[in-house]
Amino acid sequence: MGFYSECEPVYRVCYGVFLENEQELVLSNDSPCNMSGSAKFFPSCVQAKLVGRSAGERLWIPTTVDLAAFGVRESVLIQAMPLANFPQDIEAEPGALIEFSVDSDSVRVGQVFEVDDRQVNVELDHPLIGNNLRFDVEVLAVIEGCT
Image 1 (tube, helix red, strand yellow):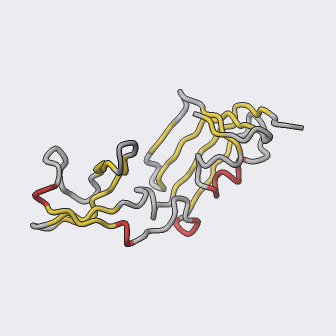
Image 2 (cartoon, rainbow, N blue to C red; image 1 turned 135 degrees about the vertical axis):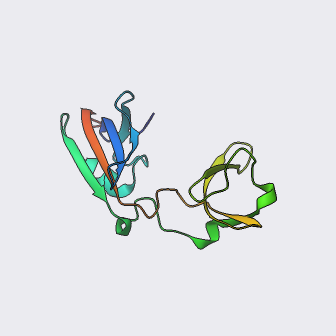
């Protein structure tokens, strides 16, 4: 998938996203993607490092919690759900992910963070908020925009 503005370079990249313990979250080697400097594909702190790069360059970009790569936690995005209403096919335990239909066209993912005998508290913030990450990006090609 690619998102770009007509007059800026488009970067064809492969990338990986890793937690600080080296756990692989995403690896796109079999599916390169096209993106521009203004695309909102990567967090802005990563996207900014891509601009001006050349084909063949490899980048290792650490992001720390203070860079707010995926935003900051918002307590208003915590939803309490009665345990009896929690889907039976998902184990109600901290860390479990659950999808919610927001409207007929979109889905939101929440992460269980607290469970007691009556309710499940689900956080609807991005699940990677609060994690130090590393983005490994290889620029495969650069297609120049308007000159």
